[in-house]
Image 1 (cartoon, rainbow, N blue to C red):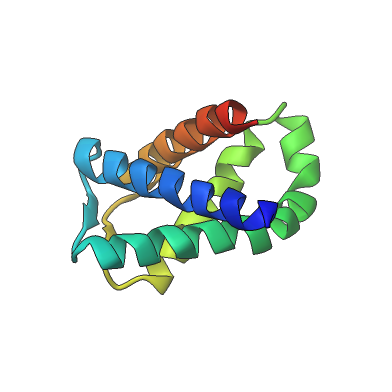
Image 2 (cartoon, rainbow, N blue to C red):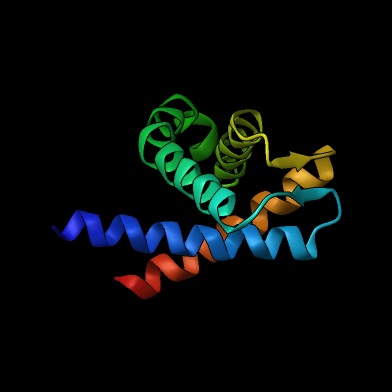
Length: 116
């Protein structure tokens, strides 16, 4: 039961993060209604749960060598996968992708600390 409430909390945080990225980052476009936003946030949450641990394992040496900056690469890959899986999300350029990665990562980290 606890994992359901935690999953819903992560989806809500991802909704806020995606809305912030689409509002403040040029080249990060979100189309559709609230239902599509919830779908995108749910996909992002599933990617973070299922794919992120595998990528952290694969990029572990890079993450250690760069003293944690390699996490940006992992988050960028996750956001690129989200862009490919969702028809309502468009990321136009690499700088937009990197800025969105940083913004979404900061929002997720801060709220994750707050939820604990």
